[in-house]
Figure 1 (cartoon, rainbow, N blue to C red):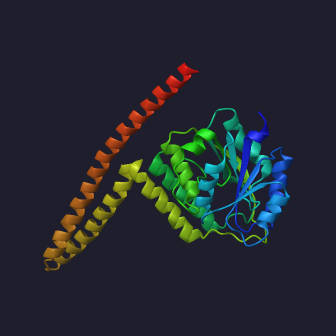
Figure 2: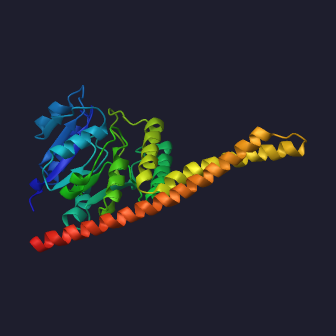
Figure 3: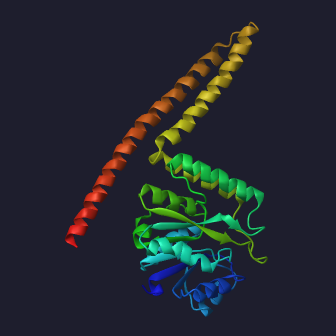
Length: 309
């Protein structure tokens, strides 16, 4: 297969310090079909990318998520490798990331940055946040991955055409991973090296704000994939609040004070909590049935296609 059938996708925003070298590095690995989607940089990112022979399209909206969605709609090649334009990914790792897709073993491959990263590539807060988010993802979707926020990924056309991306910001990596699980795509992780950012390249990620958005995305999207997780957290919060209120009521009762309104509130909170758990169980049964029906329909469709071929 010619590497021309592989599109290297580089989302950028003010990456003039690194984009030229990133493009040259991928070219040195034998990949000349490079697409840069630029988020209206106010430096020389686009000029440098074009001078290095990359195709450049200007993002019509804002945010990394919107850029990737726009690029996926534009790309027609059978295989896509997405990497960061800030020079934090090693171009030579492309063979490990792309390999399982080319061999037909996976629809979506993720480069795990956490097994080999340069000193200074992550702050302690970044590392802690990544671990929390990965664990939360595993609990919500039942698929335990090491690095769901990686920007180094490979896809086949089936994968990128199946995604229904709605998130506009840095939540897009978690959304892509969630979409892959929901669409029953074959996912693999491979180890990659993660480098510290260039001294002239400032990070666009706000660890607290964007971390909250990513966590919220994982939780909200679990509603249609794992309702027990979604409603279980709500139910658990109600029951915990009820127990705390009930502890106060009992403490006051031992001191001769009767708190009737608080007693009613305690009862309502605990009952509401159990109702949420029941709702979660019923929703989970419905989602499981729907998932099985969709799986059967996919198998029938695949068998029909194979017979036609």
